[in-house]
Length: 371
Image 1 (cartoon, one colour):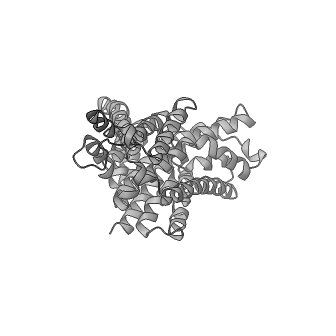
Image 2 (image 1 turned 120 degrees about the horizontal axis):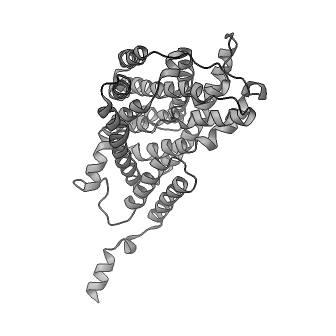
Image 3 (image 1 turned 45 degrees about the vertical axis):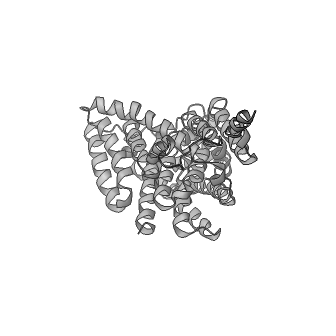
C-alpha cells in the first residue's frame, strides 16, 4: 500500500492544481478554435497542444535544463525559428502587386503605428522600456517577429507575447470587420480599383535584392528576418532554384511551425503565465491590433484626398502583417457590398508591406533598446 501511495504521489493527478487546470482549459479552447472554427489551425492546434503538455505537473518542461522540451524551446529563446518562418513566407509571397503599385507600401507603414502606440501604453502600465518594446511589436500582428523581438529584449515574456500575437492573428476575421465598417462609408466600400499592371520577371528578381539591401540598411537589427524573407522570395522568383523554393515553402516552414507552436504553447506553464502582467499584455495586444487596423484605414482615406485615382480605403486594414488573413477579410467585406469587386490582389500589397514594416520596426526597436 505504501508503494501504491508513493506511486500515486508522483503522478500528475496528485500534483494537479487549479492553475494548471485553467491553463489546460486554455489549451483545449485553442484546439477547439483551430478545428471547429478553423481560426489559424496550423498555429492554434500546435500551440494548444503545447499548452496542455506544458501544464501537466510532474513533466520536465521547457524551463528544465537538459530536458527534451528545453532543447526544442532553444529555437524560440535563441531566435532561430522566426527567420526560418520568414524564409518560408518569402518563398510563398508574390510581391507583384506591391511592385506594380508601390505607393501602397505606405499603408503597410501606417499600420505599424499600433506598435509604437502600444510601446507607449506599455510604459504607462509599468513595464520597463525593453519589455515595452517587446510587447509593442504585437501591434504588427506578426507572430514570428513578436517571438524574435521578445526573445532578444524580454525572454521572460516570450510566452504571453507569443500567445497574444497568435491569438489576435487568428481572430482577424472577428476583430477587423467591425473596425472597417466603423471607419468607412458604404460609398467608399464599393470603390473598384483597376487591375495592376503586369510585372516583368526582371522586376520580380531585382525587388528582393534591392529590398533586402535597403531595409537592412535602415534596420540592421532585423537583418535575419528581412534577409531570410527576401532570400526566400528570390528563391521563388529567380526560376533556377525550384527545389530550394519548394523545400522552404513546404517542409522547412511546416517543421518549424510545428516546433515553434508546440514550444511556445509549452512555455506557458501556469506558474510563469498566470500573472497579472499577462493580462495587461493581452489587453495591450488587443488595443494595438485595433489601433493598427484603424491607422491603416485612416491613412488610406487621407491618401484619397491627394489621389486622382482613388483606392478603396478598406485595403488599409490589410496593412497589418497577418498574411493573408487580413487581405482575405478585406476582400470578403468588399464582396458583401459588390459581388464583382475583387480586392484581394490589391489588399495583398499593403499586407506584404506590413510584413516588411513590422520586421523593420522590430529592427529599429532592437537597435535602440538592445544596446
